Image (tube, rainbow, N blue to C red; front, side):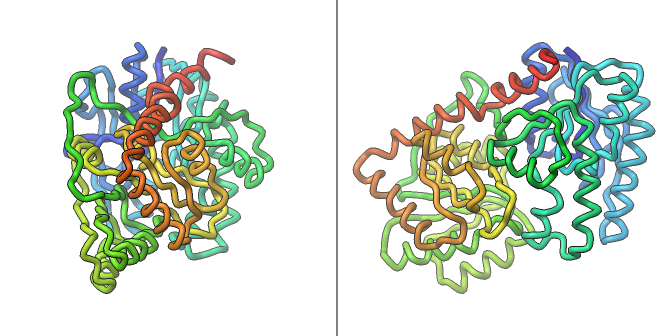
Length: 396
C-alpha cells in the first residue's frame, strides 16, 4: 500500500521523533511505501528530499526553508507553506498514486492540499486525524484573544476536514464534541487515541526506581497545562513532610513563570529539567513512580494528553487531571492504570498523589503499572493506531 502523510511537524536532524514519525515507521514495518510532505512553519526545513534516519521513508520539505519571527514573519511562514504545498509539494507527488493520505489538525495549515490530491485522483482515500479542536480550544486557553476570529476560523477548519473520507478522533467524547461543534460534518469517524512507539526489541534496559517516590510531568510548558495546580499540590505534600518529589521535564514559554512560582512557594521537593532526547527521557520515566497529566479547567473540548501514552508505555501509573468533558481519565481508571481527578481541583490532585504513594508503601502500585502497560499494548501503541488507520484504505 502507498501512503502519503502531509504534516507541519516531522523529525529531522537534531529533532526528536514525534507521533507521525512513529506512525510512518509502523506503516513501513507493515510493508507500506511511505512518503511525507513537511511544511514546517516553526523551524523551516531544507527544500526537496530530506535525509531521514529510516531509509524506507521519503521525506520532502515543501514549506519555508527558514522560519521568520514576529507576527508578520509568522504570517509569511504560513503563506510560504501554502505556496510550497501547492507548487513543489503537488509536483513531487502528482504522478504517484496513493491508497491513503493522512493529515492532521490544525487542518487549515494543510491549505487544502489533501482535498486537491483526492479530487485529482492522486490519493484514493483520506484520513483527517483530529487532535485539536481549533479554534475554540485556543480561544478558551487564551492563545487566540480576538473572539471575532472564532466564526471564520471555525468555518475554515470545518472545510479542511469535511472533504476527508474518515475523521480519526481520539475518543468517544471527542466524537460527540465534533458532532456538536461542527453539526454539518457527516463524515464517518474512527477512534484512534494518541499513540507512541515502543522500545525496539532487545534494547530495553532495567532502570532502577529512584529512592524517593517521584511524580513526573513531561511535556511542553505552555498555556493549557495548568501546571500551577501541580506546583501547589507539591507545596501541600511538602507541608505534610511526605518524602515525595515532583520532576517536571520540558521546555516552553511558561517555564520562567513556573520556576518563579516554584521559588515563591518555596518548593524543595520540585525539580525542573530541560527537554531531553526521547531515549533519555524514557529512561528517566522508568525511574519514576507515577506520571501526571494536567489540563486547565473550564474548557469545552475534551482533550487526550499524549503524555498519558508515554507513561503507560513505560509501565508507570497515571494521574489524569483533566477537564470535565474528557473521557481520558475514565479510560485510565477503567483499565486499572491510574486515577482521574478534575482539572483545577488541587485538593483532589494532592489526595491522588498521596493515595498512590500509600499504594507504593504497601506494595500494590506495581499492579497499576502492569495495567498501564497492558492499556498501552491493547489500545495506545502505534501498531494499534497504524492497523486502525490502514483499514480505512482496505474497507470502503
